[in-house]
Image 1 (cartoon, helix red, strand yellow):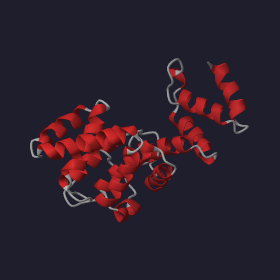
Image 2 (cartoon, one colour):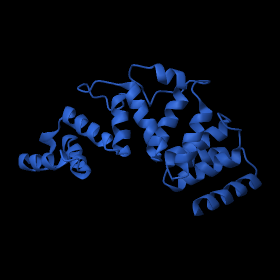
Image 3 (tube, helix red, strand yellow):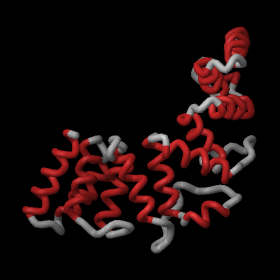
Image 4 (tube, one colour):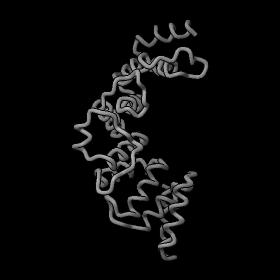
Amino acid sequence: MKKALEIYKKIAIRDDIEAIRELIRIYGGRPGFESAKNDREWIKWQEKAVALGDYKIAFQLGTVLIGDWHLDSVALNVQKGLRLIESAASRGLDEAQYVYGTLLLLYDSHSLQSRGDYIDINRTRSPGGGEPTEAARYFLTAAKQGHAYAQFELGKLYRDGHGVPKDYVLAYMWMNIAAASGSEQSEQNRDELAKHMTREQIAEAQRLSRECKQK
């Protein structure tokens, strides 16, 4: 294992992105290399990958820096973390779009830009908070790429008229698409929503679901 690490390091210092990614996996506790787990080295090589333009690693590092990984050995840098997540979202990474959309449901832009402490992505959303219209925009871009959680969140926004016009047909459509990906929560919410819809609305929503999945 020690020899393998030295080989990867020699290659990585020449800016070989694959070797850098391998070091990130190893220092992150990759199976078979558990004893090499080292948070500081893990962060160091992620920084290197970000400098070389790896936006997927940038997203991962961003979630670490805002505190989502709960690592006591890593100093938080919330503003840098947010910039990395937003940058990855702008590059088209669906998971980053979903996470940034979630953050915008919890906090408005001013609050995000001024925060210096830990951000809890999983905290309960307070009514009237955040920027739901912007959140919906991020969810939509992720949903179109097949991100089931974003599809479900978008469906809830349409159901509640939160950030978007209330539209049961579109709400059902997105929940139905997410349910087809195996989301039990989406299936349950879709079926509950259907109790408040006409047969014609459900038929239209199902038709739109089929069309959307064919694109």
